[in-house]
Structure formats: C-alpha cells, structure tokens
Length: 105
Image (cartoon, rainbow, N blue to C red):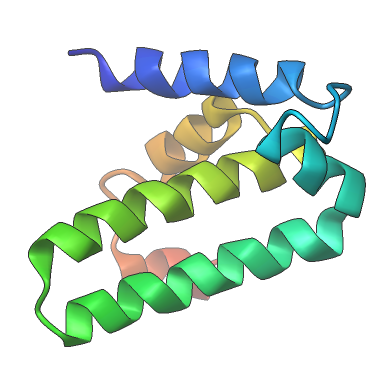
C-alpha cells in the first residue's frame, strides 16, 4: 500500500468537495462554515486523540488519528496547502535534531 498515494487521492476528493452541495457532503459543509469551524474540528480531534492515548486505547487512538488527519487535510485544502507541501517540509527536517530545528526557527 502506498500511503502517499492514499493521501493524494484523499486530497483530491477533499478539493473536489470545496464547491459541492453542503447538504450532501460533510466536507462541503465544513468549507461552507469557514476556516474557524474547520480549525475547531482539528482541535477537537486532537483532544480526542490525546484522550485515547491517556486511556491507553490503541484502537480509539488509531481511529482518532485518522479523524485528525482527515480534518487536518480539510484545513490544508482551505489554506491551499497540499500533502506534498507537508512532505517537503518533513524531508527538509529529516536528519536534523529536533532541538536544532526548533532553534533555527
């Protein structure tokens, strides 16, 4: 399974939903509500993932991670960010100490 291709396909589906009917598409309804609501959903999913981790619930952590990634991708689309933009940033950080990378910001 090529995980990057999964993200690429999902990114295309999300982008296609930008102008879709909000009554028929959850993603379109989030776009219609605006970035503030999309960002709120990202935050909610992050909290739910954190709670699953604290509860040591592996299956719930997997599910909430998928939800978080999905909502992050909606936010990325709203901000015209592609998964490739994220991969590029990660590639630039590869092999660099986290402490050094943070100090360079």
